[in-house]
Amino acid sequence: MSHSHDSEKKYEIASHAFLPMGAMLFIEMVVNHYFAPANMIFISPYLLAFFIAVLISLFVFWKGQICPGQTGRLTFVFKFFLLFALGNLAYSLAFTPKHTPLLIAGISSLILTLVYWSLPDEEKLYNTIMYCGFAMVAVGAILYLLVYWVEIPSLFNWVRANNFAQLLLGILLAGWYMMLAKSRLDVFFKLLVQLALLVLVLNYFWVAFVLYQQLQIMPEMSLMPYILYFASQFVIFACLAWLLLGKGEKQIKNPLGWSLATFCAMLYPLTNI
Image (cartoon, rainbow, N blue to C red):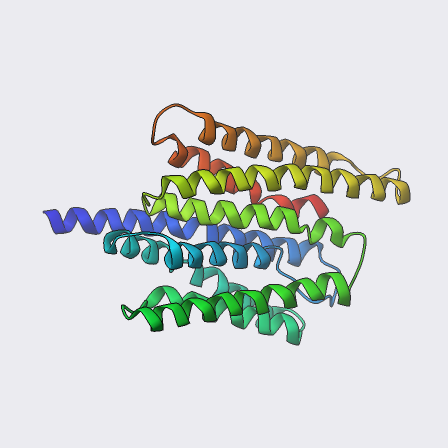
């Protein structure tokens, strides 16, 4: 009976862990298929957020004082990052124009997920794997940013490639999966929420600045996507404030707050369609 209960619980966690990665793949494919210009290279609106989430997870494994039980739960949920990395790379290769820097970034994201499948016990080897992971995150993120800001610079990229929105989503994704794994790193949860609030404020200012610039060029453009976007950002702010200021020791890991904030953060690509 105990084994059956554990299996059901693991299946429930797995089904929940699937949702963010599946939703991100669905949104980026729909946006690219229906709204991207013809024959334009596909640049995932979530790949930088993915690298940020991986970076935070690696830091947790590297410096977090976690017991073997927590390590097992964390590696189990973070393995679902493979779903996005594999789906994003497959979609890029099969249905969009090929682009070498983005292909390298996509391959880096896929290889990074293999870290969660086998973490060695030997300290030197463990640290070596962490350093390699950090290096691959840097390579993938730098290539991604170079494509947006150097290869195809555009005013529209200021929203479409909104680095603050992706940074915010990456932070929330890492926290959401840690919450799902029932991590006991309460201090780290508070740090993530505080960091997310800071990035959220910066994102407000950035999007307002970009909106002002676009209105100078296209004064009759529709403001509805921006209104909806600012509304979603307010929901994120309310959720984060609730997590940080709510009463009770477990409030900082409240599943509803993390889930709603993370889902709203995923909607940022819809601003620029």
